[in-house]
Length: 119
Image (cartoon, rainbow, N blue to C red; front, side, top):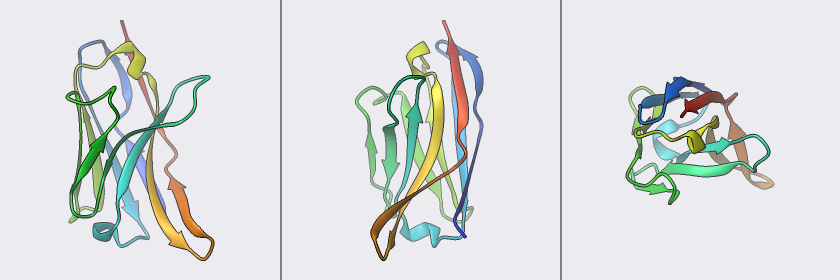
């Protein structure tokens, strides 16, 4: 059974930093690309950052230079380091993995962790 458990969200002031963690189980973690998405109130969920099994990374333009995604395969954990946070970064952040199934790729999500940035 696939489980993704996020932690590390909270309330911070603009300019501060946070580190999110996502602990995965039920998957062969080292072989899977992982992603962080976010969803702000009234907006669609959007990709923030992703990392392949080999460690290649990709970022949304809005977070480039401020956020860093990384993974620790020994701990089955993916991280999102967030620096210079802005009020517009306020959202629920979700961990994601896409797994092949008989119907194609299926998205698995964590429960989300709230990040609130005050101005």
